[in-house]
Image (cartoon, rainbow over all chains, first blue to last red; front, top):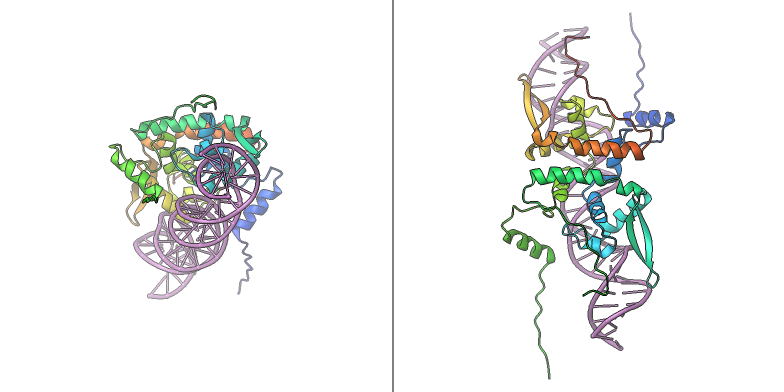
Length: 144
Length: 144
DNA sequence: AATACCGGCTTGTATAATGCAAGTAACTTT
DNA sequence: AAAGTTACTTGCATTATACAAGCCGGTATT
């Protein structure tokens, strides 16, 4: 006696994609885990450092680019764009000729503070010798 | 009358490197900011997700690889290696034939919990519909 | 005894992200 | 008029990530 079987093989990633889309949730990038969602926006070498600077009071391109980690100009521009589209940062013109923008955190961005604070606490413990940056003092232009 | 000048141009990154090395601090990768130090270890798409799983009680390769974000096998292997060399994860043999390891967080890794908790809080607020994963229940082999 | 299967990776290759230097547009200063 | 400044953009090299397939040391099945 013979048995006959037909095995249909679907690529797993496509199956997962379809399963995700068929649920009436907003489609998540990797999973519906809040940590995964957060890391889809924040999970890279630079984004949280830019947010650190903005939390410390830096506002302008020049202030951000001069941070000691020496971010490349194209990366900074790219991250500011991405942070804007994800609603973490908003830009605001501070002069017209030439048109220049300041960057500030939205509520969504401000709410990242506890994450940065937790990173500071961990970093201070396990990287002794590291020093926490102070709040950025904005020099008004008429002082020397 | 003629003026003569010799201008020597050094590449800025080399200058910075030398300046850093001349200070008697432990050499930091990007800066001595604790956040930058932390992100040098944790700042990518996958590392903190693996740590989430370990904090939830997962221990083995197979448990880690089956997480819903579908990390690639080579990335998981690479991250486990890096996490071990940075002292966040330790591996421990749980059988000899064939030799197999379990991965567990060290104290340094456990101390990342507040960071993950902060990420969860932020993610829950700004990605409604996301759901927090429950602690991984380890099935003992003699239970069905 | 041979074949299939499983867990835990490694390898090869394609695509995407990052890093670096240089260039550009619209001004201001010398 | 020439040089400098700010806020970027562009081109290209290097590095990281993604995906599929393969491999190794075992156990289970036929």
